[in-house]
Length: 343
Ligand code: DP6
Image 1 (spheres, helix red, strand yellow):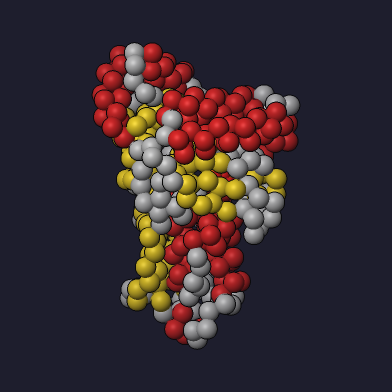
Image 2 (cartoon, protein in one colour):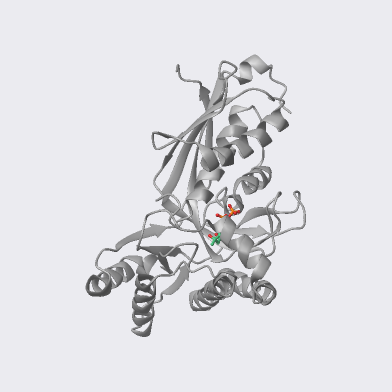
């Protein structure tokens, strides 16, 4: 708990910038829904220009928590999600009963499978903790961000991040992984609209009903070991192969859930074909997909522009409405405290 008096803390605001991340080895399914402890450890790359900027101030003059995203007031489930994080921070900082004002801007297409919950909940955790006067180290901040959205635990760190599944609140956190690889992700944005089934509901349904889920969890440990070895030795083809297989395994568990969860559309499959054709023609490129129709091509930073050019050219004839974005490795969370703005 902070030693600063309540009045000082309720005048301090904080702003955090957190970047999206894309998992190379996936998190899919919770062993503990409340604490967000996953069944599998996961490995991701934080991206450079897809980010969320969030400011938080705890203000005794407020009657209730207020939150806005890109200028629009949040209500219902979206606001409830913000309040889960605010409540955790309030409890820890001794600010029970003090409401907060939250302002957020996103450069990630929200809820389109482009990891907006990762950057959004990491930025919220960072800004709320700092505004409340808590001084958390990166590991504690990763654990806090995890409580908002599992993948947010990884967005605390730049570059490659490994989220240890752990078995309780203390042992489930992410940490950075160093590598000689310079990776990039070429995002094929097929649909930036919100997804029909939230990833939270989809993973719950998968864990509860897919007969293939336990096998994917068992296999995931081997996938991660292989990916980490490839990352440490700088072996992009090995990393790409295991990442692609792990993502297809995850989507397989969704398809065998009851009722099935199908995020990939005919346009996603067409985009996948362009990735495979580019690889067959010698470009180092592998695909991964998350809880949405978009396809992300894993490649090296040096080849990213050539891969994007090739994908744009091939997609033009097949799925012309796609947008292709090149994202390089990005930084970890940045948090600063500042005086609260006048309302
Ligand atoms: C498919 O982190 O959004 O992107 O913990 O329920 O908020 P909650 O889920 P979330 O799930 C991300 C799942 C994924 C794979 C990944 O990022 O590892």
